Image (cartoon, rainbow, N blue to C red; front, side, top):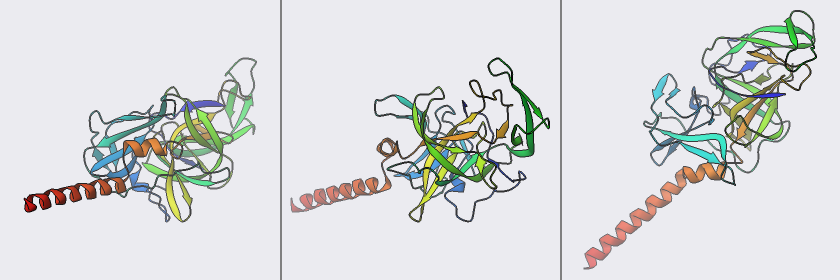
Length: 292
């Protein structure tokens, strides 16, 4: 399985979809409006407005709900592993408040195998259900995929973007991956011929993976990579811009890096405590002055 970073501007493919569904918030909404073109808006932390994205996408201006929010220069922070090496997660601030809710960040552990998660990304959608006949060659990454020429593999070709889209998927397990920005802890979802199951496409990087547990939605991961049939597989040489059953979607873990994230952007309660301490300190100064 060839692991490829999700770059550019593409999106969620849904089995059984016609390319026009799921472009508005779902009835049970984990944070649809918080997902932008290059990242996920985490919320207002003490008057600072934080976004989390994939490092290989890079921080920058983000579009949320049709409005562009400017990045605060010099605010980018690469999330680090315990050994201080970089990951494929980066935090940055924007200059204005989008007026959106602060998301719950998953802690503890990733969603377990067989858990249902909800992915959201901005870009391409499914076009035509396709079956390929495949001629396996003797070399590396040179197999010939002929659409309509057999039933060796099935899936979808893709077409143009209509904006942020959501779709559900099922977790297979945990993984550590590297798309050129450093080893990153994550988890991955399979893509199968099951009605409603979705996968990301190249370009969904920075999108969200949400998980519902204990009656609450949590941001569980940031979309980072897909696994397609490439060098070392049989068959290999999967055509570009296709979603084929047996592919995978990989998300960088929020739970595994929760402590780092919240040390970089203290939780709102931390600001409240600091404000309370400051207020008490000022009150003490006033009392001492009055006493004098």
